[in-house]
Length: 91
Image (cartoon, rainbow, N blue to C red; front, top):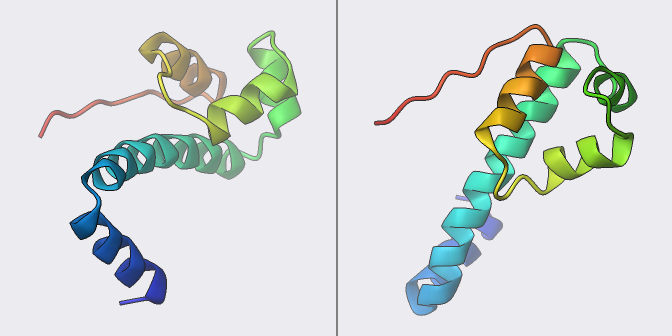
């Protein structure tokens, strides 16, 4: 286990607020990473996807880096701009 993982696990055990916020933040982070990876694997730049979505590059950057409270409709539009689909799963 890395030092970072050890630190996070220790901190989560002693700080309930950190534990709760960490999990939520990590989920938001993963969404942004998945979007960025999908864009990059499609060979599309932030500028290009912004153009397809009729927005600006800074909006795409916010979506990829700060994806908290992102709407499902926005996720669908982003995926469609890449020629992809969003698939949700409740497990």
